[in-house]
Length: 305
Image (cartoon, one colour):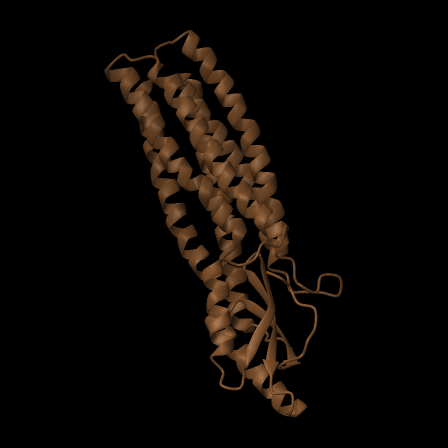
């Protein structure tokens, strides 16, 4: 037995996810354009690191854009559980691309640290980074709205490095100001290395989330505890065992065995299972619930965890 999700919600979720993917690509293209112009004018390592990050953002956003298009496709004959794991694959690819870029920027920053130099046209760099901050903050606010409505892993992964970009841009702004006003030329490469560290921290977050989905990690303990409470809250349910759960993109999958009165008719057992499914579905509208009815007191092999 399984409870289906409401089609209207899926349609809205797909529309929001596609819009977020398109917004991400558009912002990345805009940032690359203005940062390329600023880097060529300033020769700033910290700005170069920010440009490299934006180039990665574009690649990651394109991966996200296409992953989302696949993820929102409904289940088909070959993919009965849907296409949600495409988002985790996208996150995995993003983490590899971002790591490669971070290593390049680190090498460039170390070079400049050994030979510090004054940044050219710093005021132009400051203006460009300020504009970048405005664009990035606007995108992150929109992404937060989409994530709250869809629970999309791909959009969440995309939002992680855009949130890191806000800190990155602030660091670049600080480097430009210190270089120009205080003549602290080492600030540029040093803050470039700080940005690399922030990038690698964001990679760890994306990578962990992607691996959890690909390896079918159980839903959080609080979620599982709530599912048990909902199931055992039905007066006719005498017990529960072998509960399994996982997520794939925005979708969640929950399986469990209910222990019911062995003298109960099949029709009554079916009705109780439907009742419990409905309770879980209300609490977790993105979930697909599978329930198996067992006679209470039956001795059979069960999971030990």
